[in-house]
Image 1 (cartoon, one colour):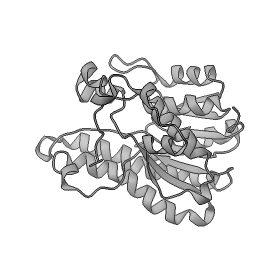
Image 2 (cartoon, rainbow, N blue to C red):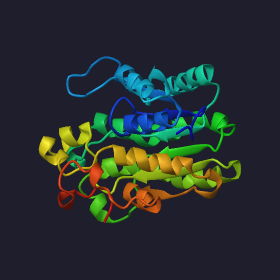
Image 3 (cartoon, rainbow, N blue to C red):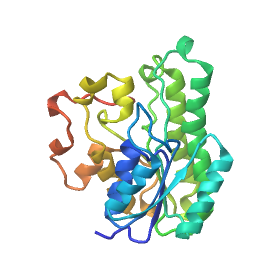
Length: 274
């Protein structure tokens, strides 16, 4: 498969999990992948670094560029974009995957964690899109894909963790606004969100450990869904809030059992989906 041959994809937060899975999937189709993240050296609680991720991209058949990036720093983002252009000559796709999470109520959300979530999720998505924009305008079938949920105003999703919900919805508001803003430039801007929990370090560390992982799907389902979205003609597919399983069903894939870590009947539904 060479559908993405010659295309350059920037993925934030791609040293592990969903970001890395998307990178590997697009690398299999020939893409150049820019791996970004803060994990430059091995972390005791988190698997992988930007360098091991780059090795995985190359093993999958793509070309990789690993860049240390703190999304809270606008100068870092600008340097990342410059390095990407120097190495690959352009940017065709931006995947805003990086995200910080704290499922805490107001009284138990410390200021540093609140700031981190808003700086990485909403602000980071906005700035990465802003600095990639001049190059996306020159790209081939350019896309921005935000790993963020549909905007659901049900108080159920605000009450238990309003700070996180605000920050995560900030990413989705970028989808809503930029899809309209960039429509004339034919840059697609969409969101993708999982129907179920995804087996990542966040689930293991924050949502119940190895037992919770058994109720999740593998990151591969998000990678395959992203692959199909990013293949679509951007001018005709923008402003959507896609759910991974629905994307696959649109592509004729009804049996999702291969993505499950445990019994399909015991999968846990993800946040923000009633």
